[in-house]
Image 1 (cartoon, one colour):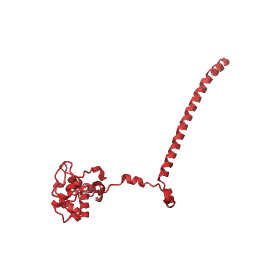
Image 2: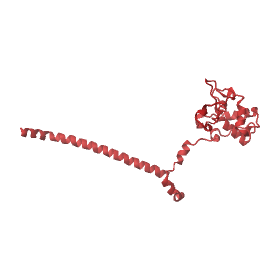
Image 3: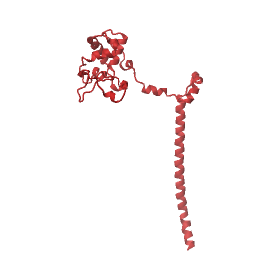
Length: 208
């Protein structure tokens, strides 16, 4: 009987060894893949840091600070907010505005400030709740026609996608906000704004 049992074990031993060997091969393959992945990650990080490291004659002067912190200046350029001149560019100046006046009117045309808010610039609001406080004396024309009516920004009123007329009450608000335009009449501002508005501006470019 013992001989029969021994014979059976001897008969199944090759199959058992085959299973064990296969499992060992699988484990080895997994470890190899993991090792290669970690090695690739290390190499990738090394190449990334090397690409950011200073080169050329200035390297000797900047190498030490570079070791302390990775230079990520190129990322700043990806998220850098565009200037008004970059967004609008050169435009006609039918009213012979000064450089400062034209710059102010361009800025107004893309401003996300709302003259109907108590704090037109949301960054100036002392608390989150104050962002929603409106000016009680603000003209109704500075608010949209929704319910409840919400204060509109200079950008929305000057560049209405529905081609709505600019509220007459907006021009005094613009002169108050940009004093350099204080001596300009409504008619002059309206005329000077036309070529500025003719340049299409996607609101997503404002970075607000």
